[in-house]
Length: 323
Image (tube, rainbow, N blue to C red; front, side):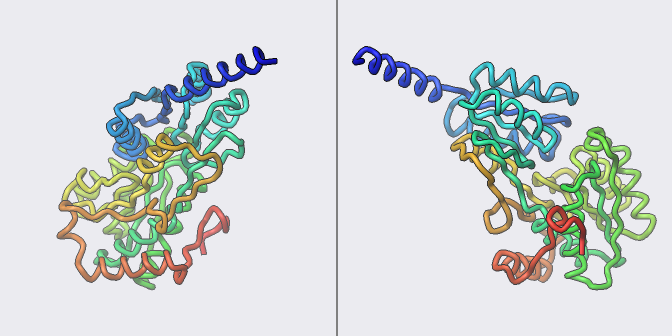
């Protein structure tokens, strides 16, 4: 009995030691960790953790859909902990592998997986998009603003819906145009198509365009620069990409989410909105002269009202429509 107990304690100690020295793993999705958008925000969060802890992490960049599950399982077989999948497209693979490795911790960004060892991190994109929609309507001289989305999925419709609500809140007569780039993963990395859609909206009078399209947004920003219009970035602070053209960026703090998961995994659902500091709009030296004090005052007032609950922003994914 004593031998059995001692053996169990030694085994438990060994397991704890292994867990303590386990390396986290980050699986970046299509577009790569330097997409200047969603994946790069995740990379910045992982790098922050690495710098603060002086510990390494494992990583893999998915280049085609078949690699997602393979990469996650390979990390699990290596004992990586936690294993973080970046983007909703990895939800199914995370769920499957998490069931196979119940003693390891997993996380998914932008999707919900209901497994006891998975942390699901989602954002209230509609709240941040409401703020940049307000800014777009206030900056517009034509009263017409645009939106270019990436893959046509409910998540991107959530951005669009919040943006349109914010624009109409600032100017009840504003006209909005919206286009999605495509229906497959390729829609996230097609800057040429992004530029075409942006120019088509500009031809109809839009002078501010918000892109929620990953790498495709680069084409939108270039088109705005060429046509001397405004663009709004997404996910990361993209104000520096085309200084003088970027009105602002809708910050979706994927970097904070990844950093927090690597620092302390907490199974269950984590929702990050304005109140939690998970979304916001970006101000820096690149757009300081483009945003007037009055514009910012109104946006900040709305931000406070959303946080307090005075302003209710419709969530497309909850309502299945944009009111």
